[in-house]
Length: 411
Image (cartoon, rainbow, N blue to C red; front, side):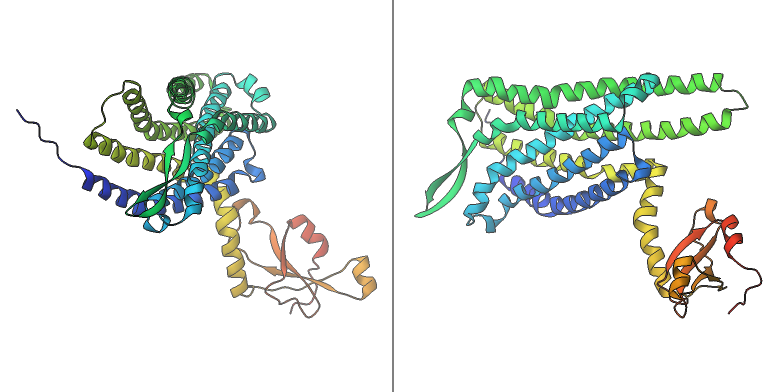
């Protein structure tokens, strides 16, 4: 019986076009934007914690991974064939991409372990899980991952080939990279340390974390009395949201990493077993490689969405940092105060210069509920108090009663 093998070269070309030229630019753009916004929000003073230090570092390295991997996708464009500088950049960009990916993997394992310690051993967690210690661990993890990835600089080399009486540049593996000792020693070290062990560790600690949270909920419901139930439930709810967010980050990481890990081990097995690579099998592996790399880029781009969907505090700080400030500035530049009451207010230094300052009272609907009882004022000099661009301050009612004269003339 004759076995008919269908040529899948057209499927490979179609996959490369859809993935590399359509999906990758879109995902990278969204991912870089989301990671930058995550860094802005997570580094606010109100968000200071050891967990957010890890998440900020993860967003930074995910952003680097997306940028470097995007430059590698230019290999599938026609304009790079005649660019020697790009082919000399490609080996370096490939190693930098792997470095950023390896740091992200170890950081994910690190903050999972850190969260497990904080949930299971809260007293020790307060001593061990501090922002300062987290920064030191992040630096150590980054240095270790970079050092472990350095030998990859010796894997590829740029060579010249002649095709149709034309010389062009291409890439090939060095003798060092194809040696049996390198593949057995270093290659399996990378696969084990940055793929197999992290996936096993994340499955283990994530399972323990989920189990611990479920058990803790049952115990707290039984032990919490009616007098302090509200305060305890609120604190537990905030902590559980943080834990739930980290669990979702890890689960998405596992879903996106598992296919790539399986493909990597399969390719390693084929190389070590010296299995004959037919054209059909090679194209199938390349198609699967495009899809698994796309999953890795999705994993590096989706964390901002997870933070926004799960964490109420992240949404609140994001709106206050990015949205409300710009909206308030734009709205203030367009409108005049709805009600104005002017009262002279001067200090000794301003009185010596003969300047009179006015407090311009106005209503601000875009304030938090806790500040709605305060009176909002604009400070301006005599003749400039109606300027819409005056600096705004919030004064408490007790302070306003001391400086605001009820019998002053209203304009």
